[in-house]
Length: 168
Image 1 (cartoon, rainbow, N blue to C red):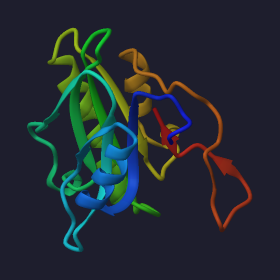
Image 2 (spheres, one colour):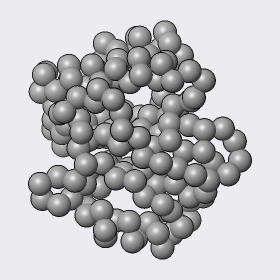
Image 3 (cartoon, rainbow, N blue to C red):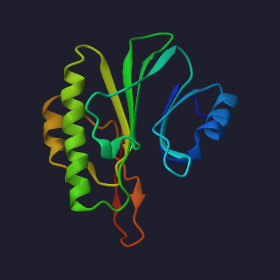
């Protein structure tokens, strides 16, 4: 990460303690925000920002199931406009119910974002599901949300077909 010049990192599947992860990122010049700590003391999601001002957001109405898998930050870079950053870590090998819950999460985020007015949102995540498998994808497209890339991000061990399960 040191060689890459990004000012923001949306992290998923971190599986690190907040203290250890924060000290490593601080050495690289980043301020860290973490998702809810798991029972084993690790966290699954984080957001790292380099410059500007940032504060962690409590997302009103975030479903309980997603509390440890979603983190949000309001970040104002040293140059530019404020943006809400959201990092999402989907369930590994999700069941139909977990896919439906992820779909509802995205619909809820669109509704929440639209209530924020002119503040831009950037959502990144390891969804563990191709976005096109979620019915919310069509609603996201209709409201102007889009994935900024198209390439595959995963080849599952039980298939040879590459899929895009990570989005920004």
